[in-house]
Length: 292
Image (cartoon, rainbow, N blue to C red; front, side):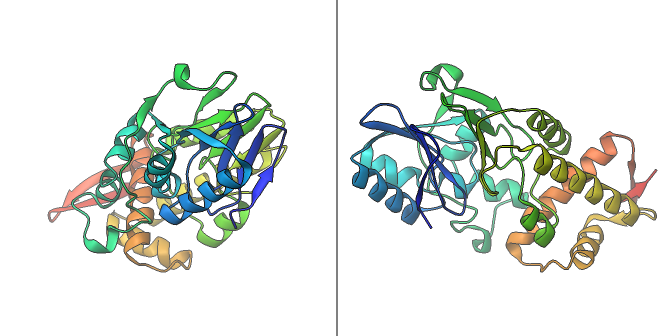
């Protein structure tokens, strides 16, 4: 873990729970794409920088999930690097309490205020194309999170953040986290068409052809949607839908899974309602979902 993998003369990734990109800007300076999940990850990244005699100029965060920004504060303190994040992600990076609060839908209890969902705050600037290093391309990847983005480096390596999951992850956990299902599907359709020397998803193996995995993720979204519709043949409340999905897929409920899967299921329900496949009924002061 935290091995530095060379892809091209200039571009590397650091093997970690969420892959970290590293690009040499010149002989001395480098930038990172994301920073890992915590201070310890940041420390291991700094050790790699020191070993190679590199100075960290900037961190470009793909999005604000804690496992992608957790090393920001430590690395900023050690190197005085700049930190950038796209759109709303910059606000979540500056005020990371927003992530567990958003997921829970209220003030998060202590069980949700830990490094997996709550990174240390870091002062991120809003990322624009003008702030990217020369030759970099910003690739908008909304859906998994609010304004998530990926990057194409000057040597044609594309970092895809969390816009898709590996087959192994989907087979094990079934329901991957999604904020906006419609935007997520559109992103995957766009990713299917991308060409690059190599693609680096944060949570799947590097590959020269991403289209097959993107299609598998698309099919899994539609499978989950159909399962939810089937559960709503009779009016059903959210908690019952969630419980049945956990049971059907053999998932284990805890606080983290409740908020992550629960938030995702709410997003599916919104998408299915907006697309005319579910309707809402209020009965006995309960909100019930019903297939149309």
